[in-house]
Image (cartoon, rainbow, N blue to C red):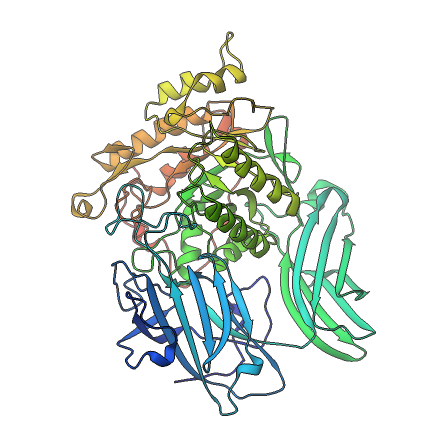
Length: 626
């Protein structure tokens, strides 16, 4: 039984963009049982809990202590902890549970949440025992064969095949308790307004607001106070634009702007006051930056910016979708930047909030993508829409996120080119995304068969650089429209009939996929779009592909497939253990296009490495630069 107090370490808070001082993690060992026959309807019926599982790692993972990769339709969790009942309000948080979670405390049913990638919480104040001992139980239903639920890369076959990976069942993100005042700050939305040199701030208050309630908002860059304002709370809401002092010339303005090269964050303190009493305090942050597009180019902070992305599946060998530690997250971001990239396309995964925090802090562009379902039904559309709204709500405040992607390669809308309902589905989520977040570009369906988009994303795994150049470089007889209409990467049209290209930026958002496997790793990873047999050949092929991509003026950026080997996929630039497959300095030169004209013009100086007590690049020693 764990002894629980609410003096959690702020540095380890699982939701650093919205945190309070009084919290406590419930991660660690829980009692656990598989219920494949679904014979139990409540935890009281379970007389034997045969397993211990380490939360937040899924039972399929080695780190959970189980490593069970079988089909499991239902499982149960139990956690016993101590906390004193008081007049304080206590909220129980779950980061993510796949797929449907029912929750009880001390035998009292708290509620249910459906959706495998988004957070939920319950007020447990009235469910606490008078004694200190509290018993929390969770039942998770996750049909491994259901193709109508958003499942991303989780395989529906028992053994992972092709480009799909082992399943993730149950709790896979943090569980924690938080002390919250009766009248409290419930939600925050920040919108940088660069053209006006302002920060839009919307704060929503929970509870019955007494007369005279005041919200205090302080913005700080380091020790420098940028704004310190007070607002009356009216109808449980505060909506304000906070004007910052415009420093004038670019040299001073750039000091406050966020970018991958200079990720300046603005600390944001929110306090609720009633007279002389402070009744709530939330720590957050924001950034001053804009993302948009104009005249066929992606713009960051109003300037053309060439995106050099890498496709990141977000898996680790022993923990799958759950990051093994914050150090592992930071190491991944450092490796990605050291390899010359300035962003990632998080593929078919809603990433752990800690990754987004460190991307904000260390400077990495992120494309937020919705995990796909694989059938088109009324239920699948409802499930995707509900969960996508929760994704937007959770992640909208992160400055690192610069593009939203509701659909990928027509997965879940398989007849997109021919069926109007499928087109309407993509258009609906595109417009819904733009309605809720007009500050970011949105790609309705990335890869091909575009019907609604701000960036035209093309997936083309042609492994011949000369053919890529021939396809996408305009000649005197061909313009952009001719190029997009003529070629069908993946056998699909780039734009659906009636939705011609209208001048949006064009990006090659998946390409490469070159597999290279050391002989000792061949049992683990074998799959790729093309293959090479040595590190030297892999380097040569990568350099030739990048040489071609940087010469194609049509593209305003790219996304290479992929960051690491992932299970049977061997097409990573790095092995699954994050060892680079050829020297990082050579990789970075090719990624940035140094010496190739176009890439050199759009490359920017890289920031110095973030210091660590343990050198994250220790494993790379011994690699030759030749």
